[in-house]
Image 1 (cartoon, protein in one colour):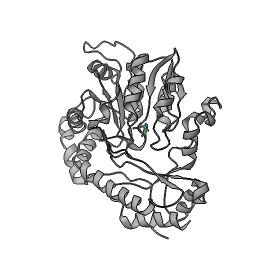
Image 2: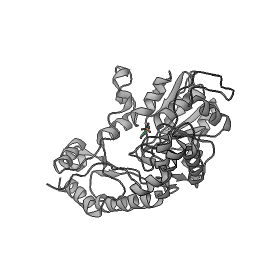
Image 3: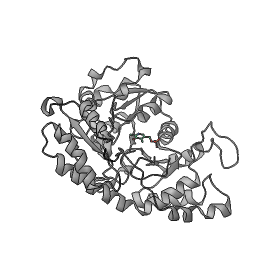
Image 4: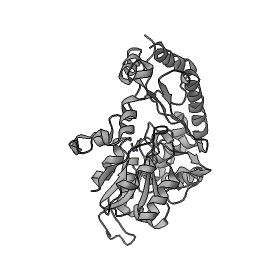
Length: 367
Ligand SMILES: *Cc1c(COP(=O)(O)O)cnc(C)c1O
């Protein structure tokens, strides 16, 4: 049996580099609560992402909940069902009703042309997702938000380092959430951040992430605990030094996949727009069972039999979560439904070899 291939594998610095980075923590014994590493990583990330008002959090999900809370949003949020459940869960957990909008066939992001009919008097926000690092139709979305006075919050968990028309993904909308989870292009083991257009929300999140504690030591509001610790920030500082190599390695892998699968009838590849600089975060394929002759699940099984892990990501749609008790039939978002039933993310990580990619593609083509 060939060696097992997992769908992802975390990038890591050398042990020595990380050890060197965390060594000072044994002297200061300051290991959380906005320590030296935390402050340094915030600064370095602002530089790398060309961003301002970037606030580090314990993970991406909590950053998203925090954004919704510091904006004081209520009522309804127009969002996409083709995402990781974190997006939908944050909306629900903050007491808002998700209103699911269909997605675009070519890049899987929310279909901006279908947003407006979903807006009601209760709508307070649009919460789209830059799926696989594909950037949403941000100009159209902003126009709608301006017309109705809505906040735009991007789930940019997949979009670390991605630029569109020369702008960083984090500069779009009123706020963006990035995830630094171990499986993402850039990680801090667990971690994430919020980037705000306005400074006042950065300040408010500083307070929110530390229980609502004000500078005078009094509690101004019931905040939470969403702080990133120093060991996580240190991992981020190390990984950020190697991010260019890491992305280059992913790019080579993606090009190899494309060469292999470009002309396979019934396998559709992710379209990346020309004005977008990709981070090569994922390699999704969409299986069309009529043209390919096999279903997505059959492709998944064949890979599994060959010791290759793939991921049905995203499947099922988050609108099908049990808590909604069928309130949102998948037929209401037919494109998202079709993509979710056909999509499969193939293994992709730094250092994935061309031989392994050829082996994976060989299994698919043999079907
Ligand atoms: C990873 C991810 C999240 C959650 O981020 P965590 O850092 O794991 O909490 C949210 N949305 C999307 C689209 C993601 O991929």
